[in-house]
Image (tube, rainbow, N blue to C red; front, side, top):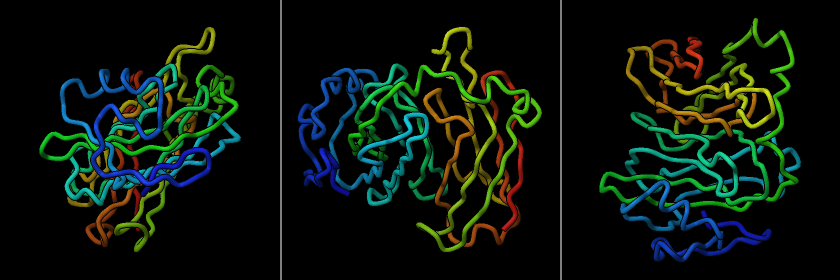
Length: 251
């Protein structure tokens, strides 16, 4: 999918020089040093990053990533150049297509990028500019001021849709305040790990979440077709305080 900038679709060559950022971000060199060091990096229009041109709610910006056109992908990083905490999500599509979605917080207008690492060690980048009024990373969560989240913390609501996306699509919501630690007097409190396994115990997707993921996060993951036939899916994880996530999803 081409890059999106200023409301227009821009054609992007599948392998530009690493310094020629199609999104023209002043922070691209910082991002390259922080995430990729000396690894080969190419901008690649086979990485589809779908996000709103203008996000009305900087606390809940929907982003969808599809890197399946690359073939086998070892990991995908999602990050926003101008966030105070840049990294939002790391996904390992172990036995699933490299296609997923999330909602994140943006502190200001920023490129939102996905970087997919293939087996040869090359990072392939796609992205989109998102305009927003900002402030999403430094506002306290609504949940941090409510006693209800303590009773429902890490409660999972999920559903599997057969025949959606690149096979079957799992959509899940987890009750969690996802505080960034940047609001005065409120420490960082967020989900750290998430793992989805099939009915036989095979891990399909492993994810590592960071503070910019939205409160009560909503994730979607494309899974192999017919995955529910082997029994209920198992969702496990934990947050940075050691609280566990453990749920089953039945077709």
